[in-house]
Length: 191
Image (cartoon, rainbow, N blue to C red; front, side, top):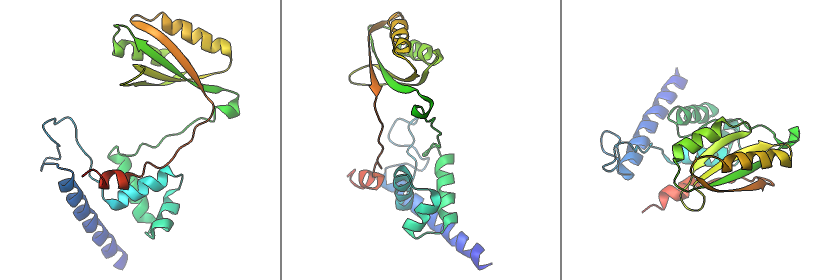
């Protein structure tokens, strides 16, 4: 019975913290920001931000709980809620190098082509597992996996033939490193 009351108190504190953060980031009572109602900021409190940073650093929910001095159930509930709200996305990644495969980036510069058409065609190509539309240098960046140099040559040749493509470049990923985005600092320094 005492445990149930404790959880109710935690839930009440969570709701209060979420409400405070929502006011700080400028949401109206409907949860919308500014005049663009398609963009909706999710509400998070300091504990959510700390959990996200710890997860990005490679910690499990149990390790996060121990580091933060919180019950495991609280941390697991927070992670579940962050996933349900679309703030966190659980992913699985294939160990490509363990399978003898390499990863690369395909940089596509468009002449006058439709970004949507090119990205859709890229995603249908074997070996390409992710496509992003970018502002700045290249218009589209596709991540792909390959076994041999011939695979890369075939992919580049095919991509150059797509309607509206001006130029194609590629790079091989040698290794990948991750770090925590330090969301607490980012949100606290928005001023």
